[in-house]
Length: 262
Image 1 (cartoon, one colour):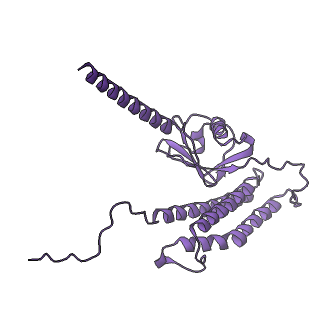
Image 2: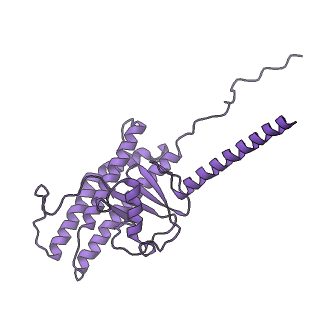
Image 3: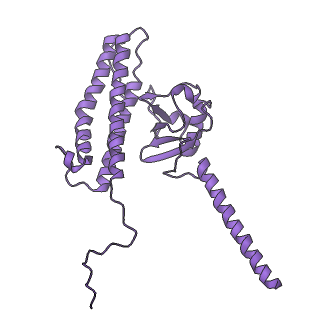
């Protein structure tokens, strides 16, 4: 009898230990302590898109500052704070205000732009600088030049990609020819990077406060490029949702049932 109780006690203790370990792992996942290329997010998290990676960050308090959020991201990505920028709603987040001041709340989505390669400095002679005079007309020309680049260089590829993702009954030309899933993933990443880089260049344009026309033109340009980026991501997400799931259950037989013999 003593031996039987001993075995029972050991089984109960092992069961409790396994349950405790599972609960601890669940807490780690919910708090974001377990981090990988893709993390499960909840309605209380911020979702940060970084290239193909998705980072979920708990946001228990919207009064935390932008600097604190960027420090958290720096720890998770291994990037220095000055090596990346955060984009939300078509604007690059600047300053050190509470995140609520930027319209961020649980469930919001941010885009992280940056890499471990240091950005070129002002003294970098390999970077060509605009030679236009610092006037409102010059700034307007710079904004128009950037939009022309988006229209001429990015939009054709974007249109072809979106047509390729569209359902068969809505498909239009031009389309990609027999793309593999890897081809689609690479094209999605390429177009997203091009649009994000355009957003950064527009953000670097700083019209004077009294240049109302230039400020409106810059805002409209940022809104247009951000709309292209949102359209790209929405179409990609919709196309992923329609991918047929692999059937894991037993397949239903299509053979006719044999008649029972009398």
